[in-house]
Amino acid sequence: MLAKLYKRKDQKLRKIIDRQEIFKCINNFLLKQQKLNLKNRALINYKFYKLYKGNKMSFTRVRNRCLITSRARSVYRRFRLNRLAFKYLVALGYLPGFGRSTW
Image (cartoon, rainbow, N blue to C red; front, side):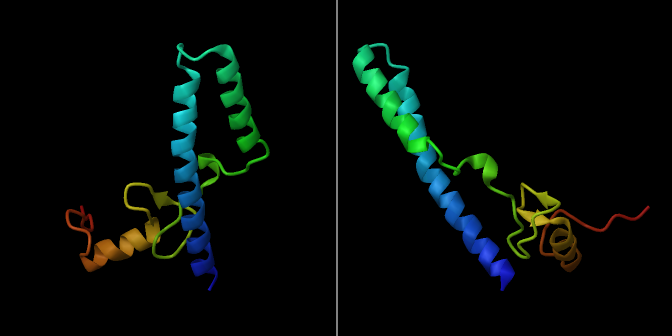
């Protein structure tokens, strides 16, 4: 039950941040334009500041979680799996190119 809650919360936060990231890039592009006069640039800067003032939605707050177990620790970014789920899937043979090492 708790794992589903964490999954939903993570997906919702990632979706919000993706939307904000696009808006942030557009604002940064507009602020760097030399053709805009100072008044318009100040207006854009004010709206940008007002939008993000007190906003706790930043990409650094997103926690990498395992897609299967929703565990937040020891997650491989490339696969979005934690080490336990990764080891289990490798043992079953679901991840091609990986195998148990013996020497």
